Length: 247
Ligand SMILES: [Zn+2]
Image (cartoon, rainbow, N blue to C red):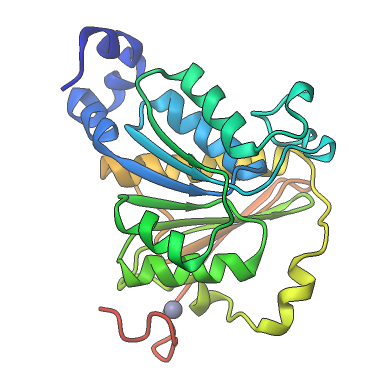
């Protein structure tokens, strides 16, 4: 149940989807893996929207070179764990938000523990090696996974519903020989994770509310330099080693 303060706070969006919609958001728990360019944007918008619970995970420390895009951090945060700084700022945005932050590396064991108990998972990662582990765990526990990836002025986003849509492996079979490449420093400008992070938050809100059309079975490619948005249908691979047997 919402209290009077919450009804006043969310008045403008309750006009869009009703008190019941706002209550659905309050009951929703979301795991965001990564508190970088994407993760800081996703969590800020979910905190403002009144999502009930956020679990955030990032092993990194704030660095000077993060400050062109990772909008929760300021100069005084350099050297501090991102997860702790992000948690403090998100709590300042919304004191009613239930927050669990982990300044730890994402691995299979912790991933299973966290994914199991949440409603929706957000991929705010910067490497395919970890993404593939997250994808596998989400398929195993049948949890919706909102994926986005960014590079330069480009971004891509899709929403995975295990058993229904392609999983990440169906779209992009990952080879372990890519490990080295995935650790390379990418070029990136803040507006790219800004746009993609907001779109990820939008997908989460629609999934939680059960309204609109999400990017299930579709992938959206965005080129911010030419400002072209292109959506493609994507199909499941029946022989996918991760989701081939999931129905
Ligand atoms: Zn698959």
